[in-house]
Image (cartoon, rainbow, N blue to C red):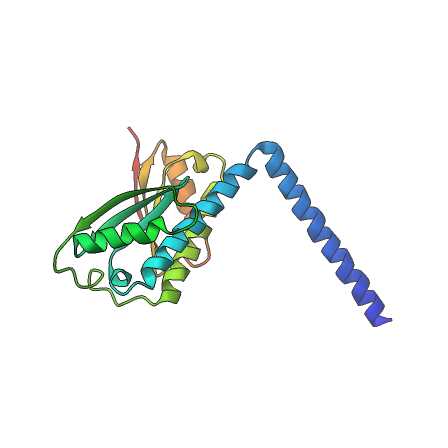
Length: 196
């Protein structure tokens, strides 16, 4: 008897979850946001893949390289020790599926040893940063006003830096509140500026 009741409850819960998922997807489709959400997820996956490629590279793993993706364009910024490392970073990014164009803004700093004296990050820590970045981007995208804004997000070991020009104090506060509420954010450094 208990098994029968348990199965019925389990089936009912599963049905409710499936119906809820279908409802949410239908509303996203109807509002035209499903393609935008898909693009956001694809951009995050490409960024994570490029970062993973750098994380396992002998020379690039310790370099302060930031990666961002918009559409199929990957932007690399930060510092490397040589022209060869700059070319290697671009070559790695070019091999990632979904990358059509690379904007390589890496600066060459001869003698660069480690990432600004930070301790070396493990592959897992780099993936944790990428996952946290994806959660933050998703949280911001869910707000219909904030998703339209160009907010630069940097993540390192739970520490988040926000940059960008925002049109109002109210939107700046919404961004701060959303980001601070994401699980995994340990410290938030706000470098947002009010657009004039």
